[in-house]
Amino acid sequence: MPGTGPVPAKVMVIGEAPGEEENWVGQPFVGRSGEELNRLLASAGIDRSRAYLSNVIKHWPGPGNPTPNIKMVRACTPWLLREIEIVNPDIIITVGATAAKVLVATANLRKDHGVGRVVEVCGRERVLYPMYHPAEGMHAPKLLPVIRSDFLNIGTIARSPLVEIIDNLVL
Ligand code: URA
Image 1: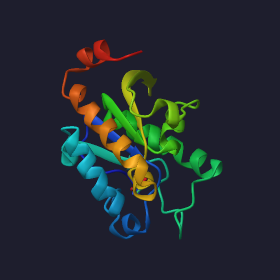
Image 2 (image 1 turned 90 degrees about the vertical axis):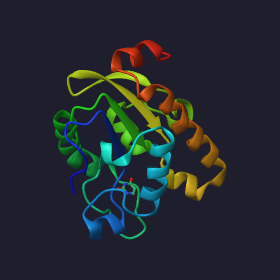
Image 3 (image 1 turned 30 degrees about the vertical axis):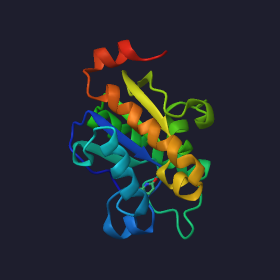
Image 4 (image 1 turned 180 degrees about the vertical axis):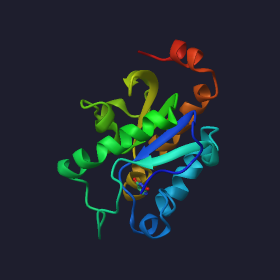
């Protein structure tokens, strides 16, 4: 399943894998975590319809949504990278550890969540925000305020031009 949204887009959101509902509808983030994601993006001043949403894994992994294994990630990554090239976002928001690690192998969400960094992805610098997955907040309610405040913080800089964003980042 490819992503959905405008092309090119200033903001691209990358999740882990479509769930069962997404599988039937044929679009990422249409289930419960999609609803939470919409609210989180709105709190950051990002209208979902203006962002391009996609996943690392391009198919539903099956009942129980098991965490994708390395073989699945390797098989799907070339498609994701091609999508990034075409969408050419200035800002990439990854939700969940799988997406963060595909772009930065050493990503550690506990340490890095919510902190924007300039990284080279697909041949140019982009601002990457590694975020916890909204579904993690639904399973571990103590994470919810952390996730919400991480998204609120993006809003303070996501509306500026990229140059300003880079200047404002803690590198
Ligand atoms: N739906 C998606 O499309 N991706 C996720 O990571 C979770 C739910």
